[in-house]
Length: 489
Image 1 (cartoon, rainbow, N blue to C red):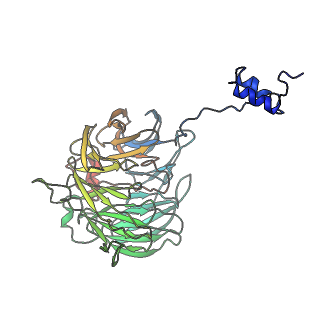
Image 2: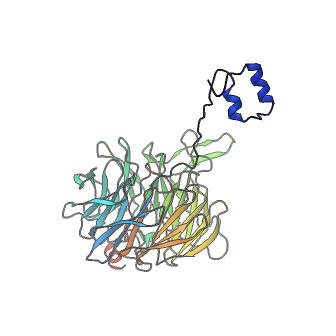
Image 3: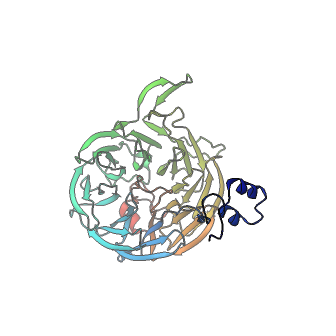
């Protein structure tokens, strides 16, 4: 005999209206043809799992000693592992997935190490060599392999993708003094070799505006490994960055105080015929963006030059944030496109904000709300509100910072600051904009990258930076040749 006998529909209705005096389980167990209650448990809900994130630091304990790769976990700011790499590394980058790191070492070798995602450790360290005459300076690692700038031979060396030692594939001749490679590098796309077109002994550091020759961007096809276009740049181009949609490439010309815009869809300068938009306003596409140092600045201390050296593309707002080393400012530039992929009517609108002395790099949060600058001479980080274009705070950090990068993996983001004359990595919390902690690293810090740059994984490739080719040296006031910059740390 059932504990809860069947109850007619009319009687069941009366029980419900009576207020369930006997308890919900007892009442509904007797309704209809069901003789016992069916309970469906509801599991607790919470925030979605966050992607794993690491900060990867390359350091140099001494000029003759092996360098060190250090992996720091995002969640606890703890060192997961430290592993030896090549001697005295001076350039470093991660690949587009954040899974592999590459360094250029003072003995001419390249180091390839893996950054594990499942088990946070650096393993399988491999070394590669290039021809004896090669002078490797820049590294770029998209999904199609490793692209290396070779100063002595004026070529881009292509190394085949591999989890083991990189194998030399071929060399592509480009313009004189290639310093970096930029692009997405996916199959069927092109990347751009950025060359200064002056002998490397003619430094772009001490007086870049006096350099007479313009640079050149050579479009390299990833399938045929040939040059498909030669695009003119400004004086002393030092760095490049591509938008996450792959439609535009921005090359920073330190000597010309401007930014060359390349339409990577057309594989040419970003130019178009003037037209009138739907509001009746004339619109013109320009081949370069001027870095006006007067926009947003007033008073007697407006710098005469800007000297752009580093930039990031902010996908959320379609803006470019640029650090102007010589002018002590950063520039926030509208680089938005319309629905057809053309430059929008506001393309090129620039706001320039004064920060500290010699901002060597800048990073922006993934939502485009704030930017953080590495003021090399001051030993500080300036925090800038990108909505009001005002400085919110300035924080003192360890050493004279050259690199600042950010990531966002949880309810708040973090900013990592590396100074080549310090053994401490400074970590900032972005919810309070305070120094969260400092982490002791083995040796002076050469560079730092995050596996989730600005909270984005994949489709964002970051080229390495080398001192002594228009980029800031390891210490302020020691601008000179690559050899000079390497010797002084």
